[in-house]
Image (cartoon, rainbow, N blue to C red):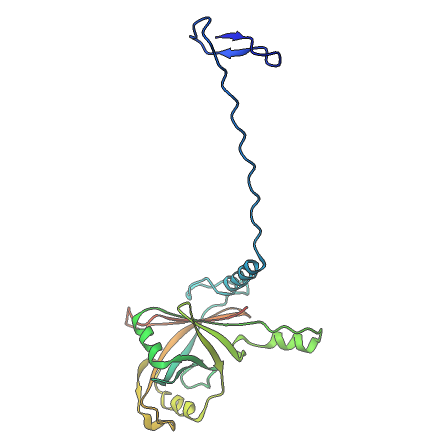
Length: 250
């Protein structure tokens, strides 16, 4: 290796070993500098709003399976509940939730979906029903309103946006049981688990036979803003409909 004068500013250049004396040598040009990186694009206000809504939804949903529980006051041990889905084939389906088949209903919810279509989906695939409602916000600083919001149970919300397997199907409305609903509940008092059809004569509407499905659910409370119901298969069976219902307040 030898040194050759290059320029006044750079007096010597390193010549690789084995280069014959007097042979021309051109030094390697300096590597071009990489172009300055573009600054990342800032998310728009719509993107931030969507991200906040998604984050609130993921935080509200309990991610534990029904058999697991935490003891930190946020996710409680599952409790059993009785859920009944019923309605005339072309009428909207109704969901009734009870502690036992003989106890008064905790919730009567009417979904904007025909009973026949819902039963078809339940027999063909897994069904995930997500019910979302917004938290009530008040402009003033009234302490009574704040206390009332804290006392409102998630199952006492009157209106929900309903999704079935990720598809928005409309709204779900909490309502008081009608006379026909009371008759159906009385007829099904002795049924703990099962599905079938009731004759149209037991109701006053006369819209044809009434289909029903009743099952036990694991009720998991994820907090004051989330509650989930996971349908259990009857004892002695390893397969059956797979239904989960999520109530989320965001």
